[in-house]
Amino acid sequence: MAEELYGDTAAKLSRGVSRIFDAMISCPTYQILVGSASVDMGTERMAAPPLGDEQWSQLLTYSVGPQRSVVQQTAIRIANVLVIVSGSPGLVDAHLAQAVDKVQRTR
Image 1 (cartoon, rainbow, N blue to C red):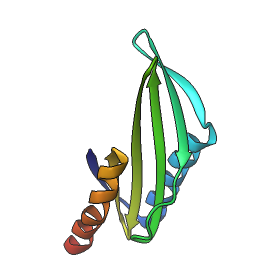
Image 2: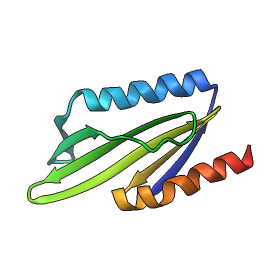
Image 3: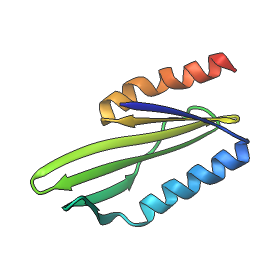
């Protein structure tokens, strides 16, 4: 699991995250090369919990041969701070509210 924090104006954070999430979701399946391995990618928009001022969430599926991994990525904007939590869906769901609460307490 990973937690990232970014700060900027609310407008810049909103615009930037929207562009990134929209770009990733606009192509629901694609392939990338990692070294000599071909990785099949899938993206799916998810409903984000109603936290903060704005929310984005997606499910990323990585497949290499028979092996598959699923990662949830959820971003919450609180005024001029953006918190992104990524990891297994269960862990993201379990820790997201706590990450948002930390940001709100330090404001």
